[in-house]
Image 1: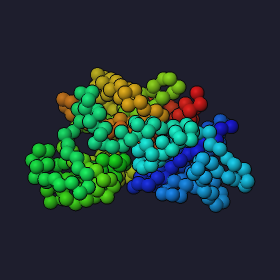
Image 2 (image 1 turned 180 degrees about the vertical axis):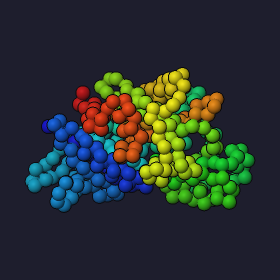
Image 3 (image 1 turned 90 degrees about the vertical axis):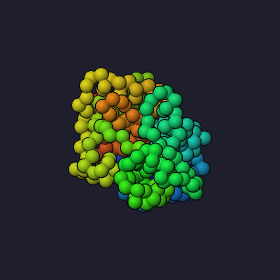
Image 4 (image 1 turned 30 degrees about the vertical axis):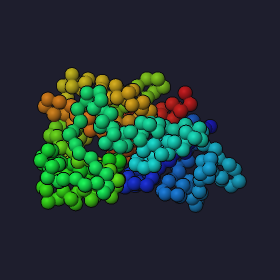
Length: 324
């Protein structure tokens, strides 16, 4: 039986959500095929948490574990870290050096998708629409008047590298612009200010099953808050998630085809989610979630269920890919 480290936690505002994802994976993975170990990373502390008893530190020199004198070597990693270092390519580089396979996208894809500034430019190279934006690094001078004159109000102010809408603000008045800038810089050294696009938020989940790419039913997200922020994503009743989304067949086909195209062009692995804004005339790319949430309230498990896959089938399929 192969040993699988389910790695969660991380060093971002998504720490708690990542723990929830890790626990869900640990609960549902097929234990007739794999022996799971829940490993929590936070800063320099990398620890295995057994179901009972005290935690045990991981040997980071070779990512192994000593339990009662037995050295546990991991055959593979289920990467459940949202945010840094699991979603931005850092942890992937570490596992590549150790030649340990993992379930998520690789270094290049992860670092690109996590940097919204660079990712948008990559997406635009295919003629795909994205919101007009400005981007700045901390300490760089910028003109609030120039930005708002070009983009209008409202605007979204975002950290370039973050997920779950951590550090994101929707600004409808110039009075709150600077505060939103400061909030975004708390999460990353680069920020993006994007125009607001009025439309429907549609998301498409995909997963690899051996050599077959499965495209899940689409979901429409309708937030009860001003936008689909952290509270709306993880608080029951703050958002409606309609799966499958009620869309014309040609629009549904377009979104699924585009998502499949981007999955291959961006060399994605495991399961991912592409988010879009659909207006009356156009489709805008919003972002790629290279490690989407897997909590009880998360979107991708809902899509998998609508497709006919249980959590156990979904998680085990992704781990199977490591050894197929």
